Length: 446
Ligand SMILES: [Zn+2]
Image (cartoon, rainbow, N blue to C red; front, side, top):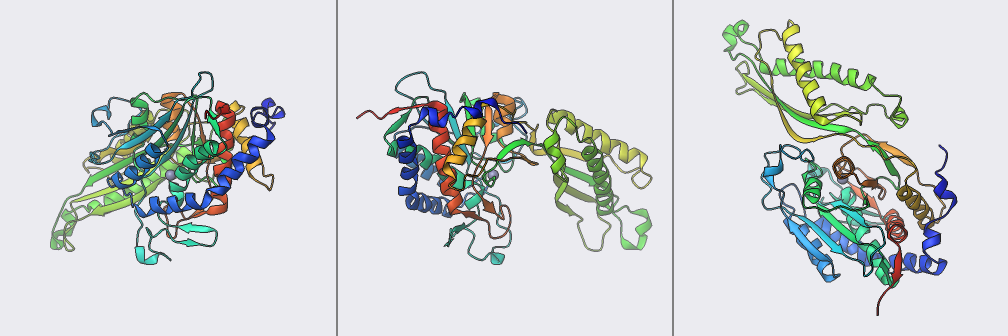
């Protein structure tokens, strides 16, 4: 790919003197031990869905101590189903809040910036399979282990300490900055949607998800579903009169696999980055539960899962297409004929995909910042992330330039999740330089 013209004119090096760059990089290094300890504190504050209050209190406190104006707000359930940025859920989140810390610049003029991270984490699975207790935040060599260490509390501390490093170098941003700590990224995206609903906007947003120090060029749209099928219960002695809801569910999965293949085959030429992804649609049946008694033909069975689709289309039209497809399958498949139509509920993320338009100034600055932070002179690579990201909400519903870039992590959502600490330091440096060059800086007032 040819490089954007702006790259031929360094921006970071135009905004910052060599001396200032070195001071910022050193400021990150000087406080890195403290940064890792803060990350450990956040990982130990287990923040599974509905249990984010503890970690958000730590984050609010850290922001207040740094002089941010802090706002904390719950997700407004009345917006679900009315505001297209929100996805459906019935989960009660009244004890969980979104936290946003803001700082205004002393003078007007610099571009505004939002740094975003989510604090919610996914379940650990079987804790006994982990090398270290999943919320112990154990450090081993260059790695920090723990659920949420990589996805994405490391990114959160990178955002916080990147802004600290500017203060450490006695620089203030010349534009307003927001520090966003959201919930619900793993399930609905409604934390990000609520940030928009509360009126927060910025000229650019950077989300420090664990991307292996690469920049996300696009993601897929995602819809999450619960499909309930009904059979005909019966006693084994008259099994012929029954129809197993579990068998119907398995047949339903076979049809959905066919739909997955159809959607993969739509691979648009206009999205060349997707050529490198084997299965961007990634139909995933996450749970299946059915039956009532081990010796009865089961009456009901439920599947939950998610399916992706290429960017450029609204989630509602894909959801309708899936509903129509299953309706058709239940009328045309002889093995399903006569079964009641399946009940389909949308139970989580229902969001389109986004594409990061190439050639933006934000990307050019991040590219330069990345190289300056990485002593190996690595070049920033772009890649497709075929899953949901909160960047979709900010990009599609807030029309914001949304960069997703963060540290190297391994085994996210799996056993022995861990984040690379040298990578975390490099990313913190890159974010600090990016913020400084994006908004501009002025010497700190005494
Ligand atoms: Zn994440």
